[in-house]
Amino acid sequence: MSTLLAIGAGIAVFTGVGAGIGIGVATSKAAEAIARQPEAESKIMKILMLGCALAEATAIYGFVIALLIIIFLK
Amino acid sequence: MLQFSPFNLICIVLNLLILLVLMKKFLYKPVLGVIAKRQELLDSQFEKAKACQEEAQQLKMQYESSLSEAKEEKRKIIREAKAQADAEAETIVAQAEEEAKQIVMEAKKTGLDELEKAIKTADTEITKLAVEAASKIVSQASCEKNDYEIYEEFLKKAGEKE
Amino acid sequence: MEELNCETAFTIPIFGGIDVGESVVVSWIIMAVLVLLSIVLTRNLKVENPGKGQLLLEMAVGGLHGMVNGMVGEKGKRYVPYLMTVLVYIGFANVIGLFGFKPPTKDLTVTIALAGMSIVLIEFAGIREKGTKKWLKSFAEPVAIMTPFNILEILIKPLSLCMRLFGNVLGAFVIMELIKIMVPIALPVPFSLYFDIFDGLIQAYVFVFLTSLFIKEAIE
Image (tube, rainbow over the protein chains, first blue to last red):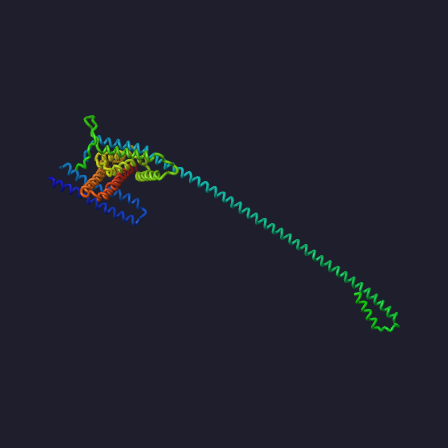
């Protein structure tokens, strides 16, 4: 049972892959944008922050689900 | 960690509201008030400085205009004085010339007069001498004195007279 | 696992005992520290010739004010003090782990309270700006079919806010504990810098940023 729980939690945490890819893409685009328009850096940083926070939320949801699996199904 | 208690929730909400009121009273209001006041002060000072500068500019312009006026006046005065001096000098020169001319003329006139007079006196002398010589010649016709001697004597006398 | 639990600090002996959570007590400590700091720092503010400390304080408060004001827009000026307070509170709550307290934001109750207040404020701002009728109508925009999704959004927005904050702080806490168990010397320092200070402040900023974004959306 506990092995299955661990496997389930691990799969839930796999959502982090999506968040990682998303944040990576967003950051690369932001770097490009800043290189192209250095004067708009503060605005770009703001939008990047927002995008990162939203993308990161996915990973966090996976993490929370993993915790729920471990705690409530134990 | 995942437990949920309504009482704690209410506590947290109340805590936050109290914190909001306290922070508003003790932090935001005084600090932002001070910032706003400083801004106001700065604005007023800026305004004042601007007014001062404007006034200074005006004064400067006034001074400049008065200065240029004074310069103009100075130039005018100098010009006038020069003109006056020139005129005076001209009149003086003209007068002097006139005088000189007069003097020269007078001198010429007196010279001529004198010459005339001298010529006249010389004439009379010469005639007198001539007469004298004639009379002498006449009186001394018998004398051994020849014509030559008489002529010499005449010349000598005339030279003396001259 | 014991470290993860939020223990009951004490129990009020009425109505059969009401448990007061640890997070509430830590919140009180944060409040006390914040208010005392404010009182001490703003003791003698001067309009002319401010000292270095005053300038620093002014820069911090003015910068915070300007930042939040820029996020929420000109129309939402009245919500700036609340947002600033939440920002400072969450920031302190995330960083307080450095001083040996358990961060209150690690308690789900706290983040639910914060997210609930945020959604109440967002909807209140919408009602105040548009009037009840228009506010109700705005659920059917852009097309009537979207209505259930729009209503669902009222639930989703605070859920996402609360879970993001909670998950981040908890995740950082768990990682820090694991690192402390593995290598208790020297190594935790840079990780602590990132997870406790940088991440905590970023999460506070993100929480307030999203809340102000939703408010801006609601009043425009």
